[in-house]
Length: 447
Image 1 (tube, rainbow, N blue to C red):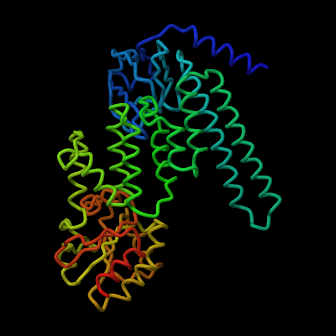
Image 2 (tube, rainbow, N blue to C red):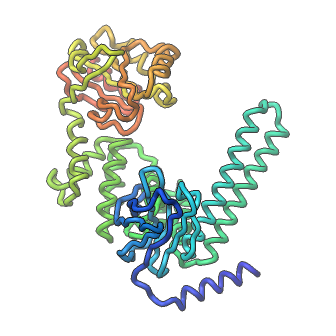
Image 3 (cartoon, rainbow, N blue to C red):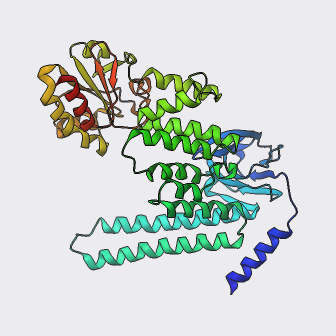
């Protein structure tokens, strides 16, 4: 009865609340070192954030954004690149007033005004507690043997109780204000989860891809991924068709359509297939054949991706072998075809490709095929251990700069493992998704 009573009160409160068109964001940071600093406000676009405003922190620690905000969604306050705090802005609330009693901001926030953010921070507190329970369970399990079934089962129950308590608390927070953005994002997220396995249009029914409020939440990217996963695709054409459908579903809002295009380009550039990426560029992006004007940032991204598409000449990067430097072109000209394998020595998915690559190399090496490994490692320890433990027979190189690798950036590598098949003139012949696809391509080329 108590929850029902709270539900009715919250519902009535939203019904009688006057329509508001903007929201003020202000607060105080109790940290003298922050005085005079710049506090930046970022707006969510899917899982990423874009800068929308900034303000200085006054001599007494007060801050006040002069602009008023009417775009409901998730936002982020940042005092530096590493000191950030999440919040919700909703124009139906006239004021968000935050107090930070220390730093980092996320660990010292007190919400003075804004029921939305009180709910958000209650949830984050409960989530943190649940994660602590799960971490403790995992630590205790690590001390047990597989035969300690009673203890393992007891720990599983502890973890499940913590998860169930979190879910119940989350539901109760949403019930408190059923028409709030918090509740809306939660309901859509639950609906998207429930639509998994039900086909792409089940996801479309769960998430309105033309809703700019949902765009300003992580559920948007989740829904796009669920839509693609529900394809159960058997051909690359299905991905291009699905992308067209998503573009149509997002077309009701200019911002959603623009973001959908950019997001799908990133998605296909990272995970493939390349044919779907090329389809998006040719059909939608001006001036490559499409009619949609994109930002300079997206244009640069597309140009860079096209430079490493099939049929183009690969970038002639410098490779470092413990101080001895080679140009990639020097190495590939010795072979008819060379597979350039971008990997990380700590990446299990990369290790899983190595037996297949060894088999490909063994089969076709005498006919002019070889492999070159480029490791996105940060030090030589993992690099050398991986070569030894995996018995890697081909030459491997690393700048020991992780994802700052100039070679990876030149080839637009977004995830590992990544494969590029080059001929002796450095032309990109293919970009196989794995060693099995590479084997089929080599078979067609050689046999």
